[in-house]
Amino acid sequence: MKNFFLSGHFKKGDFIVFFCIAGMVLISAILFYRPAAEAKQVVIYVNSEKYAAYQLDQPYDKNIKVPVNKNPKYGYNHIRIHDGVVTMVESTCPNGDCVKMGTIREAGDILVCLPHKLMVRLEGGEAVDAVSY
Amino acid sequence: MRSPIKKVEDKTSFRAVLLTVILLLSWLESVVPLGVPGVKFGFSNIVILVCLTVYGFREALAMAILKILMSTLLFNGFSSFLYTLGGTLASCVTMAVAMFFYEKEQLSMIGVSMVGGYFHVTTQYTIAAYTLYSTAVFAFYPLAALLTLLTSSVMGFLAKKVVSQLTQSFYDY
Image 1 (cartoon, rainbow over the protein chains, first blue to last red):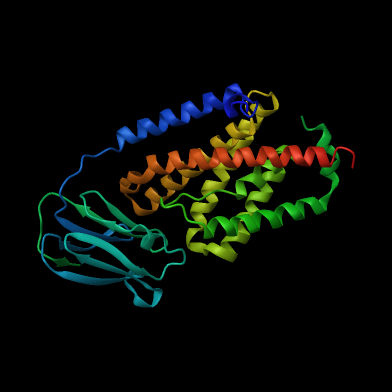
Image 2 (image 1 turned 180 degrees about the vertical axis):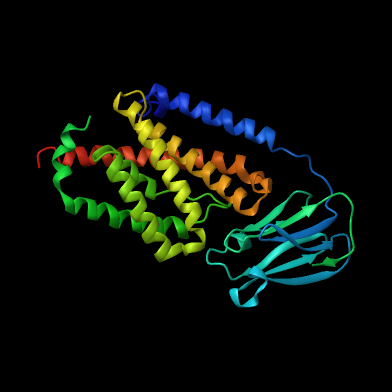
């Protein structure tokens, strides 16, 4: 059997394209790299504004329903904070990508629901008591 | 490169077939998840690539726009319209530029597909970052781009197979 890579499926330009893109991806990986840090608080953003913040290092099991656009009739995202991790339990958005994103536990990790313009982010730094806006 | 397929160019029905296939494939890719947010298999890119080789840029762009309109109405909902639109248009235009090198035989279909996939995922992440006013989404970007490189090269390989089959079957049509 002939080698797949040498059997005429590829042209010279393919390898150039591949290595250019792989190089750019590597550069972006280095640029966006952040060392793992301990998360202190959970911040929920709606429409790129701070909606609510909760302390993470508490032994509570908190269920939050965030209404879309601050109006429950457009749907909601159900977020659960427990044992130092955050999970998107349920969402009324059409594709449900945010629920598939699973559980986050480290500072800088995010859960995003693009149709609802919602972002849940774990942040390090100074912890605050539960503040609702 | 394009001469054997010239006869297909007159067939309007063939465009309708391509549009049906692209809708079926975009349903398929909306159902099959890949784990990383923002990454799909990109089966519908096969049809765009076939369109680019058989018809050229204008037809492929029309096919892409029709696909966006119909698949957002049917499967995705208009909340994701902006991401789909940006990603598909960016990949379509960059692949048309890459087709220039394809016709000079410097690139194969796989390279063209990789270019399209890369610009698709980059545009989608940029639009997502812009709507959320946060660069935090880029945390997933390197993984997503690498995965896209992989899937788009597979799709390019499949598109190459489709084009060679079409060339053979329409040669003495």
